[in-house]
Image 1 (cartoon, rainbow, N blue to C red):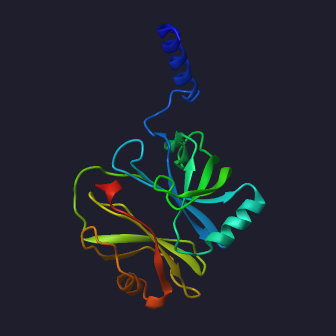
Image 2 (image 1 turned 90 degrees about the horizontal axis):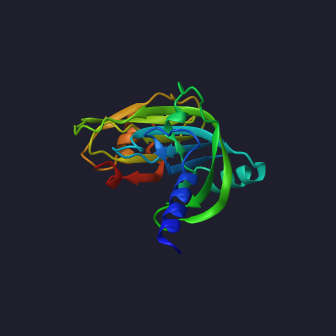
Image 3 (image 1 turned 120 degrees about the vertical axis):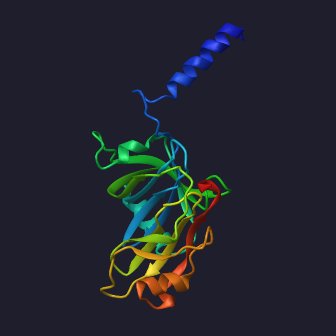
Length: 227
């Protein structure tokens, strides 16, 4: 092909991949950990300390197709195995509660395992509907330490999940399953932090005043992305 035509074709192709409006610094491909079960489905953005991924975001979601939604809830149902979603590109800022045009959903591949680390796509181009934004906060990229780790409780019934708040640099992203007793408090809990070592089930159980058997396995744990 003529070099000039090739250059023009390349420029046109690049333009076709851009959003229709001027995107902000949060535009990109925002992978998320997916967890939950019959009582709820949740998506946690996989954060980093640089744009466009410097936000910790947790969503309550459902799959628009009812059959897919039911099948996925059954397959996840509180299990510790990692699932992720690989969404279409969009501006993460459109998930903010104060966004002028708040995003109501997105299309994504649903992957058993990590979508960038050998995971297997189970559902292609699923329409994911956002029911509620549970957390949206920008990360501070300044190096700092923290003596305590704060874990949010996601879910309010028996099937819950503990998600660590990213509050230091370096830090770790940690999602743990938790089977709560009837009437158990839903407030966040704090535990002693030991560097980048994942919080043990014993420490979480003590903070929750729960039996250690109530704390399940780790669904997601990551340090490399949060250096």
